[in-house]
Amino acid sequence: MDKLVINGGKPLYGSIDISGAKNAAVAIVPATIMSSKGVCVIDNIPDIEDVRCLERILTSLGCKVNKVGNTITIDSTVINGTDAITHDMQNMRASYYLIGALLGRFGKAKVVLPGGCPIGDRPIDQHIKGFEALGAVVKIEGDTVIVTADKLIGTSVYFDVVSVGATINVMLAATLAEGTTILENSAKEPHVVDVANFLNSMGANIKGAGTDVIRIVGVIELTGCDYSVIPDQIEAGTFMLAAAGCGGEVIVNNVIPKHLESITAKLEEMGAQVLQEGESVTVKSNGRLKAVNIKTLPYPGFPTDAQQPMSAILVIAKGKSVINESIYESRMMHVDELKKMGAKIEVEGRIATIEGVEKLTGAKVHATDLRAGAALIIAGLIAEGVTEIKDIEHIDRGYLNIEEKFRILGADIKRVTE
Ligand code: EPZ
Image 1: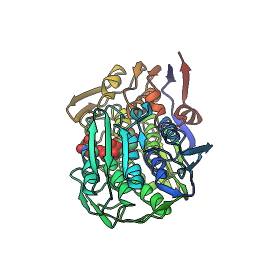
Image 2 (image 1 turned 90 degrees about the horizontal axis):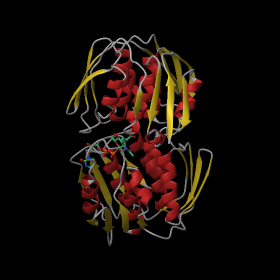
Image 3 (image 1 turned 45 degrees about the vertical axis):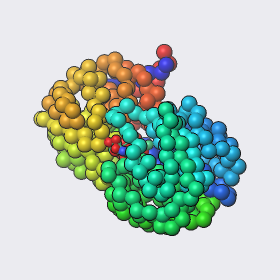
């Protein structure tokens, strides 16, 4: 098993390029299944484990998948099945997008229920609500979802919970339904907009993505297209937070600054400087930060995926911080690991109360989930001494070459195979 070994306490200087957005790519790759004519050529695809997992799943369905560098070519005109039941399906959360894509194009799907980070219950009731509203019959047999529909008919769906996955999944199925579908109380994340733009490039008719109300006029078929995935908002935020916590000056290239506004605002509140120029943001910090309070919210609020990395710098911020994780009921498993490094954090349900400490000390820790792993890397870079992080396969699901990117910024970090 691999581990990361970090010798911390150094400021970060330099510039790095952000990869394509994981949470857009893991929806766009399954969405290519909906093309019945022509191939999809998608650029800026991050070569991360979650995407490789989806490539294997599409190949198991008979699709022709070819990746060269960050460009993937998918021919789904030759797909020969609608049963996505390989073990890969449980290695990630986003495998559930196969339901919406297969249901939309073929009127049926048999899909193993998704896995994903252990950060809460993670139901799919809102996905099922949308599919049933469109006229599908949904059955859950053990760990498998079976959906069928003679015909999908456009309708109105009001999501009881703002859900990225349900918004995207029902949007997928509705693109080929007969008639118009209105999705209300929709998620507005940048990756929801990116998937809608991708589907429109395939010939869909979607308006309003990025607002609470998305209008989808069903079309007869979708065809292949050329597309490029947006930059990863959370990867960019992770490096911005690391720069603020370690001190130094870091230029984060290939970003959309607007997607980072909530993180930028909080870093400026903490005393870091953030300059936005075109497709780059520069973070300058002396490493001495002020405590702030965080409440995670759906976009454009502070992203839940940045909550754990943010907690890694709040633990050395001067004063008391309170984190309210309003999206997930148990996204605090990184706290015990940060405590091993000297952090003072108390957790009560979804609330974490942090007393800033002068310094962190390197320790042996383990990544419990993807963004917890990112938080531990940041804490290790800040801490004095050596930090070893185990179970880094969680980190590899969502970050491409994270240690190489931090090494470019002057960090003493290496991957060691035990
Ligand atoms: C997506 O997960 C992301 N994953 C998550 O990122 C991210 O944390 C989350 O959106 C919120 O932004 C991918 O895009 C692959 P949700 P998703 O449906 O779609 C509840 C990462 O670190 N809910 O928006 O699963 C749910 O329990 C990962 O990159 C229902 O109640 O999240 C949660 O409390 C972690 N019923 C809230 O909604 C449903 O049917 C938000 O979940 C669906 C969700």
